[in-house]
Length: 492
Ligand SMILES: [Zn+2]
Ligand SMILES: [Zn+2]
Image 1 (cartoon, rainbow, N blue to C red):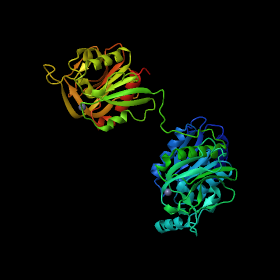
Image 2: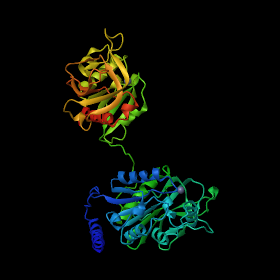
Image 3: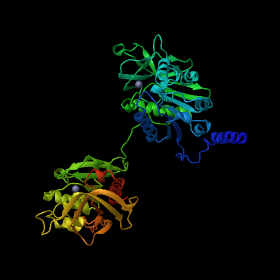
Image 4: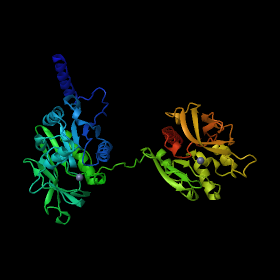
């Protein structure tokens, strides 16, 4: 046993050393990123919403790699060792001595700590502890070091710590030369709770304050909102902001939080004063998605959302292919069902394709333009024959559970694999013998081919039959297929 303990202690020391030196087996940290341990899992705030937002802010800034712990009671020195900074989005029961000691020691010996909003009074406020006691029957003394570590404690007063009514206020930097503030605007506006009457520890440096208006039950004073301190060798950043998701949407919150985490971790701030979330990628493929003529469920968007390299603009069919409209389009995706098309639209569509730009035709768009043979024979390589457009019209059947198998080697099929999917099947279509089939089903309600590369040789055109309703739209295989098809048609 002694030997094991010694071995664990040695391992702890090794991990502590290697934190700076990059590799920690199994954690797969992004190289060069600041390593963040985000502690959550209990809060009198909606942590299940706020924790993913904090994570997203940090990861989208490009500077951090984040791990979330939702049961901090299991932390110990070894678990904490690989991280540069600990972020608290936690307000709940105490963690027990090993975890608290591990976190306290980590900060004291030089790791960063960031305290967000409700975590401000996680372990110190008497009323909260009494509340916990009532609910759980467990009587806990406050974690007295916590207030030393975070620079403030809450008191039952008088005056009592707390906040007035949530409102919109301006946060003004009072120490604009601090690395966290430098490069940010002198003030920012936020809808949030403004904490007041906290008992601040000597030695903290207040970075920003806001006026706590008497109108909303405030103190009428400029209350501290952001501050820093050192705890042993560790840097601590405390933000009282961040009550909920909409508070966290304020640009000033986003930037001050991310910059505060960077500073706590490294003592420096390299992040810009403004950090845009989901910033548009200027190199993304520009997709024009054409709809109209057939109803559909909004689950379709799932195939288009959340792909940083694909930027989609939706156009309603009677408006599509107008003058100059295809100028800024790299890939056309059709999910419309239309017969009417003006000569001008035809000419624009044709010259788009002849210019070598790609097209993805989805599901019912195979029934478009039945009076335009060039369209279905040469461009799409297939046609769903509507009644009155042929001796034997095509047919459809909803809610078919199909096996759909890849039958070719093609980049569009990467990661798609055999699909088990509930979707609509078409039967008795005309399919060009020159089309190169990529996916096939053996279901008798279908003709068989479920996706093909068209014979058109002046640009890349693909047809995907799948995609009638929510069952198909939310299928990851369908989404992947559509995204691959867009990238392939866009020349990637
Ligand atoms: Zn709150
Ligand atoms: Zn359909």
